[in-house]
Length: 103
Image (cartoon, rainbow, N blue to C red; front, side, top):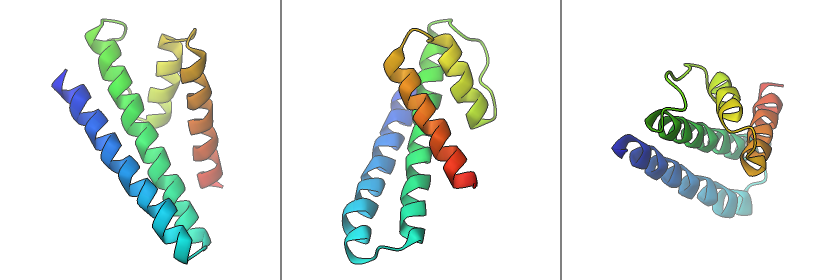
């Protein structure tokens, strides 16, 4: 359980950094690099949240192993909670962001 809380706290810190990029950096510079950096931070936050949710599912015996790839982790999380529309909406957005950043 401590790992889950630690991962969530790390995600919260990343969110603070993302807010700084959005509110400060974009205020003074409107370059593509700043926007890409913000999107990469957002993907990192999603990675941490997916990891925390999978750890929670593991403690509840809903899964046994965690995939190495972030994309596979997100897919597996969607398979564990198929009825959660809110979660699946965010997992689709996460996948969309990763697709955009890989273009």
